[in-house]
Image 1 (cartoon, rainbow, N blue to C red):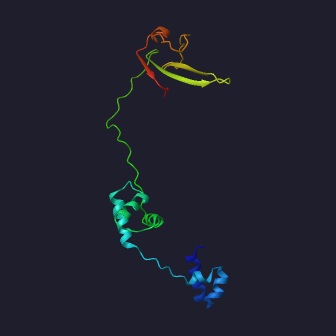
Image 2: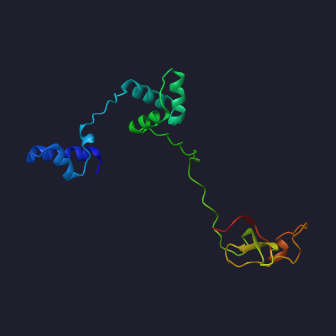
Image 3: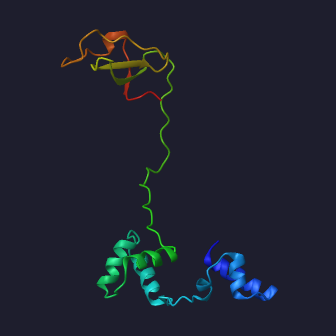
Length: 179
């Protein structure tokens, strides 16, 4: 229970049941000195207005950078107080807008009806239990979903022969993972 709620509960007990402050505090479990405490904090309206103004001008600045700007203006203030006022005013760093996407309709992909019209190529990396690493080139026909056999050439420093010599001729080849 917060101190303000305890203070209100003590006031209700005093008004409703005619209890003394000492007895009402004992029933609620509140400290008597906290019931008599009156905050002496001023509203800081000028400071809050200046903070809102700076945050409006510099939307990407957080409370730390705004604190530096306030100090440059000659305002002597603790960083924690700047943080508290920033939070109480509901100020937050504005998120960046997403990058702009291309406008317009995308051209539909070609309709694939025959085998060997388009292949997808992708390298797969893995490691054996002994620690030796290897790479495999996967080539998949997009229509039949069958993998073609790659030539049995070592992959180190050797160029592959043209894909047309492996399993017929293709009109398109696509790199990357198949979707």
